Each structure stands twice: as structure tokens, then as C-alpha cells.
Length: 128
Image (tube, rainbow, N blue to C red):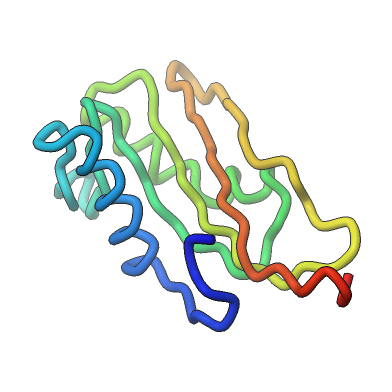
């Protein structure tokens, strides 16, 4: 797992893990915290904007994308990129029937947005 069950996960902690893993593989092709579009783009990897979020309530991939897509699309336009990646650490409380739909591609205007959801906060199997 990315984090221990008892960890309080925030965006900086998630950012550190993702950046470290990408940097190991791609080195200087990974740029950390690039300023763009009046905000901070989390990671610019191989000329592709990566926006990192931690979601504590919503499990549904479509709703998560809708919540965070505007910022990613804005960064893609500012960086002149036709693709952007939204990486979300979804940390809501899980119960029976929790969402397992973790990967998607959405087309917004002329931008292809990839969403990758990493799920955490799973109960012990005896509690489901």
C-alpha cells in the first residue's frame, strides 16, 4: 500500500510519493511544482501535466473527474498539451460495494484527460 491504514493522507504526502517514483524512472524529465495558469501544476512529466489530488469523500470516478477536471484542462492549455493526467488518492471510508472503477479517459474539448485512482482506507476484510 502507498500509506498505512492509520495515516492521515494529504496532498503533499501523495505528491512526494508520486514525484519520487516518477523521478526514479525518468530523472530530469520530471519537473516538480511548475507554476502555470495562476496556480501550481503538481508535476510536469515528459511534457504532460499531472495534477495530484486526495479525495476523502467521493468514490465514483466520474464525479471525481468532474470535481477536478477544470484545473487539469487549464494546465493542459497553458502548457499546450493535448493530454493531461489526473492522479487521485481516494481515501474515503470503504464498505460493501465500494467502487473499483479506477482508470478512465475523458475527452474535454480537444484535451484527452486520463484519470488514475489509487484507493486507500480499506477496512479489514472481516469488517466488509
